[in-house]
Amino acid sequence: MAVRLIILLGLLLAALTGHAGEPDGEALYRQHCAACHGYDGMGGVGIPLALPDFQYSVTNKYLKVTIREGRPGRIMPAFSNLSNKELNALVKYIRRWAPGKPYRYPVTPVKGNLARGQLLFNRHCAACHGTNGEGGKGTGVTFSRPRDLPIIAPALNNSGFLNAASDQFIKATLMNGREGTPMVSFLKQGLTEKDINDIVVYVRAFEKNRPPARKTPLDTDEATIVFESAYDLKTTINNIKDAAVGNNFIIIREQTLDQGLVPADKENTKQRIVFFCNFGFLNKALAVDPRVGLFLPCRVTVVEKDGKVLVYAINPNRLSRLFNNSELNQMCHEMNDTYISIIEDATL
Image 1 (cartoon, rainbow, N blue to C red):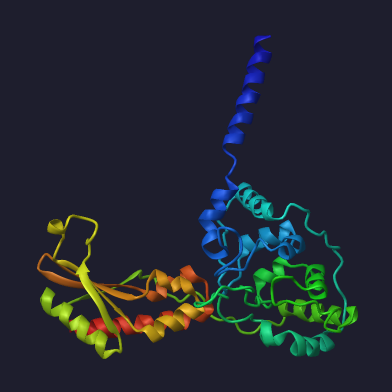
Image 2 (image 1 turned 90 degrees about the vertical axis):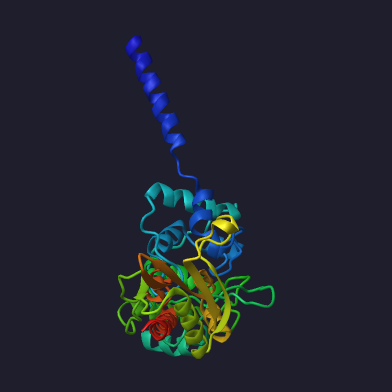
């Protein structure tokens, strides 16, 4: 009897422990997804996940593979570090926006004419999804007005998409469209099911006929740019301002590094930060990816320590790893060169 009681208590404890250790899907969503897809799932930088047409058209497998693999070179990163339990909890939470069951697709591959599919794709799809299926540019975020259709055409010629989407999923999307987005039903546009099959075959062929990959992320191991100045602290700061203005930037402000973090009389006056901005470049970068607001406007930190004056700036090339956005790589590289030019002018 005592043995049975011990076993029952052990099973009860295991069950309680397992329940207590279950991942919190809502917390995972807020941590990993909400910043881009919106706390209500209605999109922003990322696509809207709460749209009923999206919810009912995608399978759990599609969601899981998309979260695991992301979209290489696009905005959606890969979350390969999530455990299977965390992944299941996250998908379960995302599904709460649509109480019905998602559509179950047949597993049979679609057959059609590849050459004809290419012609139809160029005629009906390329304007939004790109000539080579590389996807639309930007993020769908606008600056001046509410968005009824907050989505940019996804990349179809992308390993993350092709691994997640089955032939039948692609076919159903083309046939039915997706309400609440610019994706219309091709049947309503006058195409036949045979036409759609041909397009599906062409899209699937991207797996073998992929254009040269855009390099991402940019190669660098250094998180910061560091220079030692040949001048004293005050002169170096003035030189930074002059060099920034000479590179078409406007000086925004100068302050101590710990301003607002300590009482004013406790601030370290030998650690200062200079903010400056080129608003044309800023607007262009934000249009490509609003997350550049993490490190724009530009800033340079000047520190006097142990008789040396050091100048620090974040390395924009390193930030390429955060963004997973090939379009932004050139801007990161350009900003890196600008930082080096300004700091070199100010310190040498």
